Image 1: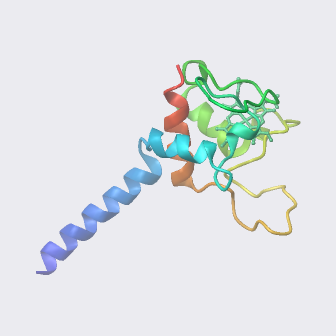
Image 2: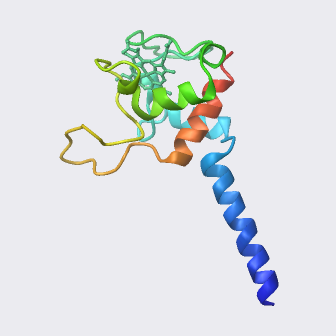
Length: 124
Ligand code: HEC
């Protein structure tokens, strides 16, 4: 009984860890990128094959999966200021150095960011 409980527990932990630090889900990532309460990346960036209003504020995200490594993409999303200190892209994975009265936690969780990075990697 105890052993099987432990086994289920291990399996759950492995699944959760996989979601947070593993490959991530590109499908979930694209959903977050287009969601106002998620990353809302489309407010600034164009996506390939995007329908409707397309922003030209920031560079298109077409081909970023070919131009950047997984780690570089994670850095862009987590805190773009580490790459370009004067960037207008918000840091999605940290609140360090930001001034907001309402936001006390990062916009995206580590799991969200893994999903967004998985989505970006498909843009080749
Ligand atoms: C407020 C506008 C804004 C939002 C929202 C935004 N970005 Fe950006 N992003 C930028 C700007 C501007 C740049 C270009 C870097 C620079 O010149 O500062 C950039 C650059 C990038 C780059 C590098 C592109 C390249 O061609 O080198 C990636 C990748 C990226 N953003 C991904 C994202 C993702 C994913 C999201 C959503 C989670 C997002 N961005 C949300 C403004 C934004």
